[in-house]
Amino acid sequence: MGNRETVDHAMPSLATRSRPSGVGMVTIGKIIATHGVRGEVKVASYSDVPGRFEKLKQVQVEISSGPRTLAVLGSRRAAEGYLLRFAAVATPEEASPLVGGLLQIPEERLAPPSQDRYYEYQLVGMDVRSEDGRALGVLKEVLTTNSNAVFVVEDPGGTEHLIPATRELVRSVDVDGQTMVVRRVPGLLDEDHAL
Image 1 (cartoon, rainbow, N blue to C red):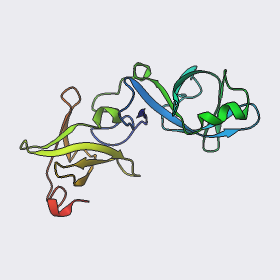
Image 2: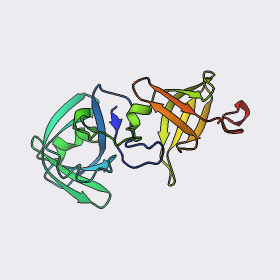
Image 3: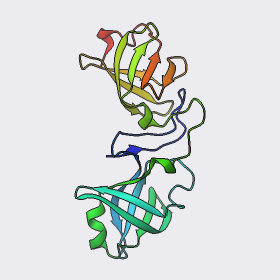
Image 4: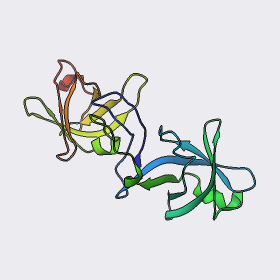
């Protein structure tokens, strides 16, 4: 599974969605179906980067049989996502094994996030601590909501806590040190208020 890309969440801001995976690869979408008789595939986008699919020339598709690198012949916007056509895929039968596959690009093809913004894959797995240095757990997942992202932090006992990804609560993020410092708020990180 690859890191997922999405832009513009609130926080000391997120610049992508992600899940740690193949070294150096970021997932930008998922193939959800075949389309038509020419081997096109329908893609659910994980990216909010303008032009991400229109400019795509090559992509790695992570499928159960292993990664497959494909040249992109064309891309067009569809009702819900994109339609892609690959050089090595000319029929629905050839496209069918790709369904469920994750579209990945090398991390170095991502634009660096602006200051105080982070790609989600940089955050997942971080140690989360309180301002007084107390270990609170590990950031396991980033949930997207209509207002702001929410961090799912699992404490050492396996209990999950939800922490809104806001500047008021997230005090600092050290990507290199893989540490996030959050402000403790009564009721938010108490053991009796966990998920």
